[in-house]
Each structure stands twice: as structure tokens, then as C-alpha cells.
Image (tube, rainbow, N blue to C red; front, side, top):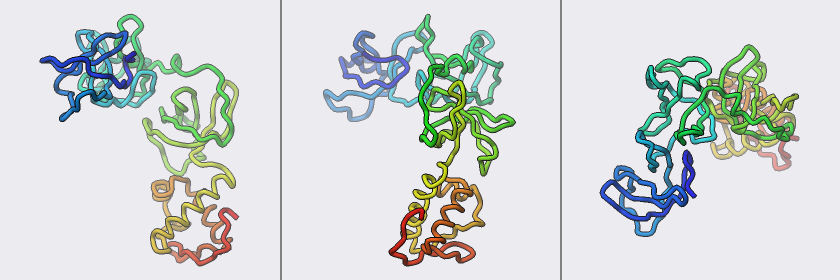
Length: 286
């Protein structure tokens, strides 16, 4: 059965002037308008499509890919505000996403970016957005462990740090003192659980801690050195931004990895940069 608001792989039932009709199972035939039909389509092929309701509340399919699907959070731009129904957001489809007035935590304006959750209206099956996020966070306890890798979406800045939605379900916080550079709402990042607090509230980190952080990073640095002929223009004086962009880690973690490599006589400092040394007795992280 096809699912509204998600991507589906559907077979072709028949062709007509308006386009192709796809087999939506219990939802019946679903039209894929002619402008979205892939070129040189082969007989019997199944199509990967997104299902939603058009302006006349008819089920339609598209091969366009939205920025977000039903059941997910995203950071979206407000395009327009209709005084009768609400705001419309850019979610990557030709038909904009409605953010009804009743679903706005705070009134929005054109040009603004908002963190929204996408859901189905229970009465109409229309896909709508809401900025009332708390009601859509998962309140069930989930077992996280310290050091566990997770994905999260940055939703806003606070005096303590940056709020985030972890694994599309739980609240998390990245503290300012654990960051080398500012973050931006809407960033999707990979990081780690630093601590689990009561209520399944999560403290987050962009880096692993201790040996688990340093050992893989030393190997990464050595591999890059080998691919670059044995030298790199990175050292203790490199900027946090450059280090994060190249090695996806903080400057503190990078300096710890360099210290481990220098201690094991695997590198030497050239000022600027580092040079790989020939040391076959090297043990990563030791």
C-alpha cells in the first residue's frame, strides 16, 4: 500500500493523456502527471515517487524529492503568508507546504526560516507543517549510552548552547564550551552522546571522548599524510574552522591526535605544517 507523505515504489497501471496511473494499493490509482514522467521509461519498470494531495485534494505522485517527509523535522524558509489560511514553506516541491495559523508556535513572516515538523492533517489527509514541536517529540524512554554516535538537527541557540533534535525524536543540547566555532540552525550533524540526563534529555558532543576519539583521528591524519606525499599544512596553529572542514573534529581533538603522533615519533612539526616520519613500530593512539 502506498503511504501519503513518503516515497513509494509503485508499478504502472495504465497511461493516459494527463500522465501515468500508478498502483497505490488500497489508495487506488494515483496519477503521475506527464511533466514528472522520466524520459525513456522502460516497460514494466517501477517508479520511485512521492505521494501527496494536490490543490483539489486528489492523490498525485511526483518524482521530485522534498526536503522533508511526513514524520520528520526540518529547517524551512517561509515564502508567503496568506491571511486566510497561514504561511507557505519551501520544501522542495512545486506545491508549497502549508503551515496553518493554528500550528504556529509564534507567528511567522515571509523570508524567515523556521524549524518545523511535517505531519498529516487527521481530518483531510493533507500534508501540513507545524512549529509546535514539543508535541511531536518522542516522550518514550529510549536507551542511549555515552559515546553512542547519533544524528541531529540544530534547532536554535540558547544561553547554554544549541538545542537539537536527536535521531528525529529526542531533545539534545550542545554546550557552547564544547564548540570551537558557532553553529547555525538547520545544520544536520553527526555527533555523540556525552551524557543522558533525567527525562531522556541528552547532552551532545561533536567529538568522541578519550582514546575512542584520538585513535581513529590519528589514523585519519596518517592516511591523509600518505596520500599527500608525507606533508600537510596543518598543525597546532591551524584554525578550528579549517580543522573541522578537513578532519570533522574540534581543534582540541586534533591537537591531542598530533600529540599522540609526535609522542610515538610518527610525525615531526615543520612550523608550518607536519611531516610524516618513517616509523614501522607505530601503534595508533599509543
